[in-house]
Length: 505
Image 1 (tube, helix red, strand yellow):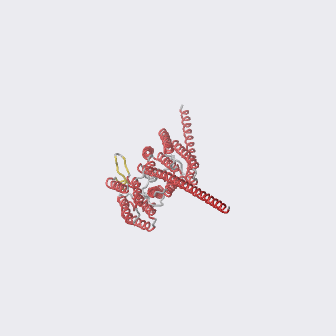
Image 2 (cartoon, rainbow, N blue to C red):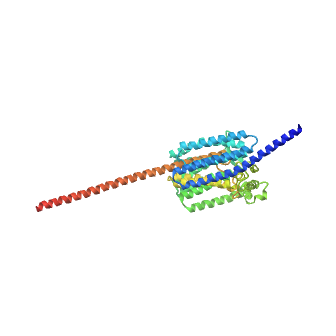
Image 3 (tube, rainbow, N blue to C red):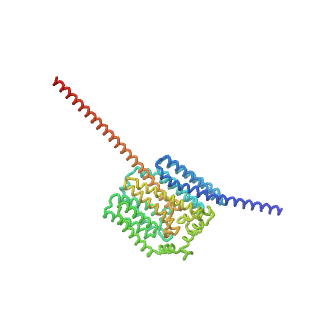
């Protein structure tokens, strides 16, 4: 009997070992499939710019949607196989996401059929990457982020229609300035300290990071001010208000947000005035302010020291960046596979260092494609800014594009040791409710501006058509007048000939 039990136990162990090996093979194959599918998706993000025909763009959009759901399926399949405890919860969570993504795509297709399909697809793709990585890192945080995303998507769905229909936003200049200043001051006075900085305020059990929303209001304030006037006296007032926003963030030690606000002001000022002198003066002032901040704030000094030489204090201030670099290096080009790496060793990996976790388990190629996907969003934002005719909304699109693009630069530059760490999250990918909601608001506003640009194009075509029609009618009338004039001349000459003949006769 004992011998039989030993044989049976050995068979069970062999079966478990065989099953584990099969799971490992599937996970290993899935990472290559995911990389190939995501590379194809990213290629389509840029291929769409080659076409002006709407049918071809629609075809690319459908192809991207298929690739997106395949990537999502493969990733959750790998997570499901590697999880031993809550397979049922993972399966339910996966199905909830599928329903959510389909609902978002269908709502935009039905309610806003003329929006940018590229921006919609990229938004959903980035959310799916976020849920995949968060489910792998911390399942409870993933579910919380999903619920926030559902609510945020419902809240922001009608923003494109509001932007398209209502034209009073350019008239609320000092409303924007006042609200922004009050909210940032509230964080400075009432906010609780997180990682050495006052970042958020607790309201009703929710932690709200007001700077994430004020950066949108800040863009509208600058666009409105520059739309009204770019005279030197008005620019000084605008600069003073902008400096007040940045100064409050600096005093609150939220230096990442302060840097974003500064860069947004710098680029919007240059585009509005087209004067390189102003750009140079503000840039020099910012460099001096950064130098002073490094001398005044101890945590800035630590971050700069960790950036310059993290290995000298690898157990303390350099620990985060060293672990981030280890993770990226371990992943190589193709990654270790989902649930096969050790991204948990990076502190707050779900927020500031999620790009490192992505590179470790999904590979450097996937990470590069993710950067390119975000770049295609940035190009789309700037493309809308260049094509829209209304000066106010042109500046709004530029400002929001700068916010989005520079935030990505700060996040990825920080975790790769290209620049010092700033504590800025990766839009739509990192964990964080305020960041997620503010980014979805930005995407919704951009979609409204895209619709406005199409409306302007249709209006211009209508006016040109009316002008061409009027010109054509005018030419016809002139032609008829000329013809009738020739007829009268011939009749007059004919009458003269008759009169001469009668005289001779």
